[in-house]
Image (cartoon, rainbow, N blue to C red; front, top):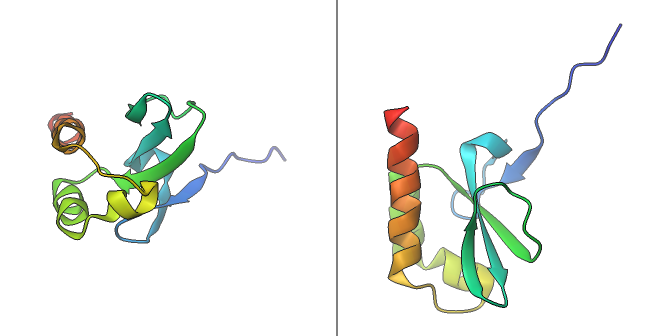
Length: 91
């Protein structure tokens, strides 16, 4: 009997829940700064966050990403995350 593939689980940095990778957005700290890794393949320090407006707002309020990356996160990153979260709701 063939084995079925299970999707890998990753922990959301804000809610600390283990969720499938497809339901999360990955951010990466590289030499160029903090980038949104849509394909989940960039090398560097990666952090996953749930694809939800509420969780993104909570991350901004608690400064969770600042702590995870040990640097200041620009507001443009949060706007990009909100766009991605809104895009997933419309699909």
